[in-house]
Amino acid sequence: MNIIFYIILFIMGITFGSFYTLAVYRIPKRIDIVHTHSYCPNCNHKLGFLDLIPVFSYIFLRGKCRYCKEKIRPRYFILEILSGIFFVLTALCMGMRIETLTIYQAIDFAFVILFYTFVILMAGIDKEEININQPVLMYGVLVSVIYMAYLYIIEESSIYRYVIYLVIYVIILAIETISLRKKAQTNYFYGNLLTIIILSIFIGATAFIITIISTIVTVIAYKILDKLINKRRNVVKEKEKLTTKIPVGFLLGTYGLLTFLLTLFCNRYLL
Image (cartoon, rainbow, N blue to C red; front, top):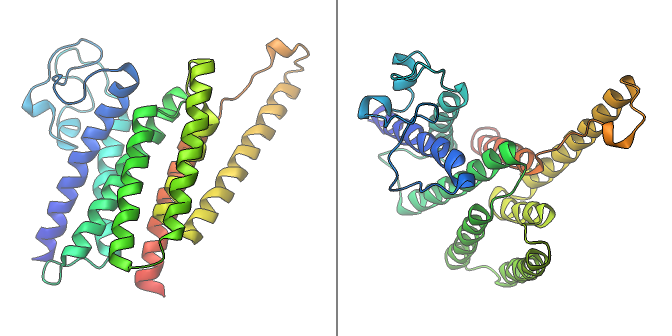
């Protein structure tokens, strides 16, 4: 019975993964992600049902569009598979079994998926655009606020910790709003700062610290590599230097999810 349960979760995961690939592509272009029919970005041909089956369509079509034969980027297939795996691993690490499943486990799992959705959309867009998308960020803030309210009600713990988070949110959003009016564009720094706060609320202290350290180390490595490349090319003029744009949000999201899953695994099977 549990095997069927986990198969259902895997199917849910790859279905969400299919949505993530669509949303990451459309949101920066401001294309409707709900009502607009799926189409091939190369030939603009509307895709049929058999073209939209997560994972299996990619395999059966051999990674090509059925109509124009253009290759489909492997990231779609990879993200769908990883989403399915993440759903199953999360359920296993949370001890979810069909015969002992409780309403609280189901709610906790739902919040994890909402959090996962934020991270994937934020990180995917940042990797492509080097930008923390504002609507996605506001979605993450909203989900984290609802999650804090849920934790306060369930745990009946002190409200001061959650009030501090809310105050920080208000301050950062106010500063970002002022910055947005002056520069007419979203501030990347404040976007990443809000992302860090959202991560700290969901993934726990240990995973959060590891995420921050890993991100900092990776950014430093990027910078050193950038300087070495410029030095090797004997670049003299400032305008000719090869500058590497670092997707900090992507790094935060990637390390955040990995450490979060690792923490769940350790708490379940090692501690």
